[in-house]
Amino acid sequence: MNRIETCVLNCYAVEEAEKNMVFAARLTQRGHKIQSMKDLMELYQKSYTGETIRAISSLPHPTVQKFAVITVAVVGASRRFLAQITRHQNETKFMSASLQYSDYAGHADFVVPYEVLTANPSIRDFYLKSCREAMNAYEKLEAMGISNDSAGYLALQSLRNILIISATPYQWKHMIGQRVCRRNTEETRYVLLKIWDNLYRLSPQLFSPEQTGPFCQRDCCKEKKMSCEQPVPKDMLPSELLLQDFPGIWKGGCL
Image 1 (cartoon, helix red, strand yellow):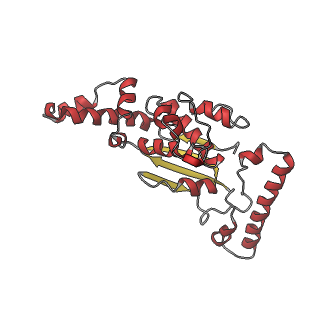
Image 2: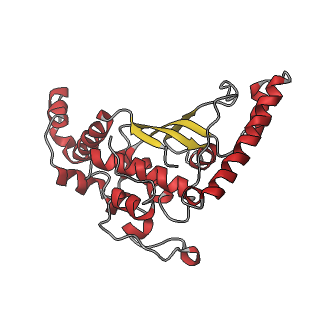
Image 3: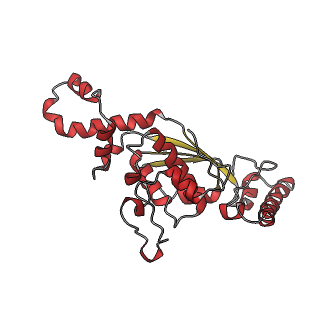
């Protein structure tokens, strides 16, 4: 997990999302004043403040947050993370490295879970040895004439992967809110916290804790008897949560 990287590929889309959101909200109230395309463009170009963004994005009208798509790259997360995050389908698109077209013989690398990473070195060595044994079998099958597509059935969930995710701001907030909850696996939490940190740095108003954080931070826990009973403080930023929950690997990110 210590080598997982995230990056917003189209940073300009965050500003575009803000502008379109404010424009869409204003449009609903000014239809009677727009008589021409010139009037419309004047409204589109009208300035706004951070407080305007915060106020509009907090309203129960998610459609205004769906007029832009933000694309994020995740390098080095596991295929287990891929299986979990692709359950989100609404207004979200994914593209992943393929086990059919990519040949991992001699190139396999593995995500080490945080619990293993911070455990006794002998445990970490045993874990990595087990991973390598599975991929050694992958290579032996290929040497026997089996395609990497079929050999891919031996690939482990721990195999490091490349993933591109595109989603509207509204869906990013939905995914982050769900997946940074402590009921998720640590890797999934870590990746989504890093993405949240990337987005927050670009727009602290649109991706503020009170609108983007886990349910316990925004309102109250929805897990009921499954609750971790460790509510996140209302004003805690993603970087602070990363430092608190993953001190062994979080060094403070950058865009």
